[in-house]
Length: 395
Ligand code: AMP
Ligand code: MG
Image 1: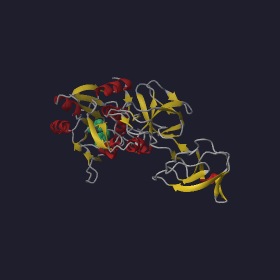
Image 2: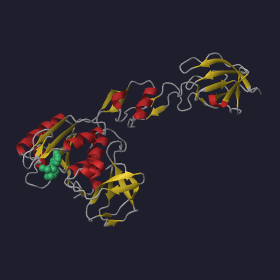
Image 3: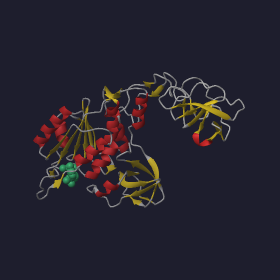
Image 4: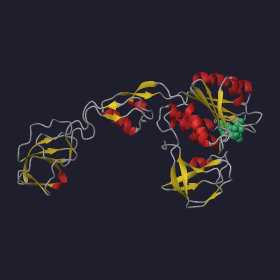
């Protein structure tokens, strides 16, 4: 059995980066830029006011300025200010030539029809200078940057309507288990509602991905073969759940082998999620996650998500880890590295205890996994532990 670190390395090495595509800005959120975005003008584009107030001309020893006009955002700055003149100006409006400083409205008073200031302004105060952030031709967003909200906004600032990104991989979901019934249908004895496909769709969505299809099948080898063969034609990354343990009815690995999928690994020394599988067929990959709902979410976070991020060209696909102080002690049976659902609250992390890998209730309240080293016995409260944030917004 390989360690998690080995599995992660193999996983990243197996990911084929997707091809490039040009997408409109609104479609590009969450994808990784494949080109340097260069600014066609200085940023800011022109000197402008950072506040609502008055643009003052040179001081010339005077303390009163005659307001000669008003300049709003989007308007032309007009003629240069002459000594002793000022202009009423609003945030974002271009400062006229000859502006020495802008004073905030709150720091001014009207006296005998002229503007008076309470404190002597500093030269350049409250003026956003042209090019102070980026000069003409500078790289504003480099290739390789995942586009977040600020990223797409920055691209729009440059006047871009579309950008070149690494294409979202086409992902398919096949969940297996003879006991599974889709929610909305009637349950008979021994059956349970299928939940893994919902967990996976939601987890994909947090990466900005939508699955191409969801198939729910029993544990029959022939049906599994047909379904997986079709599925592999319709996607680049196939995620399956269930059927990868050692039971007689765990037919997924056998079916994949028959379809010529090459096994990269099977079984990783982690808890939950030990029977997790990775295989490749040319540039396609199959991530075989175990059936247990908690294992699905843990192995998605630990292995499937890094795989998908690497395929999407993300420069740092490895799960983000941070240190937090343990709120209550953890007991651990040495052997496998364990990932315990937990709540992260500032710098403190509270394990959600009593979680079997078939239990989803705790996971639904969790926003992190505590990373317990394989050889740990007991970790006392107050001790610092590694934590992997997961779920919505943690990427
Ligand atoms: P398996 O890995 O196929 O042995 O499944 C392990 C456990 O997870 C069993 O208790 C299954 O009933 C359960 N399970 C498998 N697939 C699903 C699913 N899609 N939704 C909910 N539970 C599942
Ligand atoms: Mg099963």
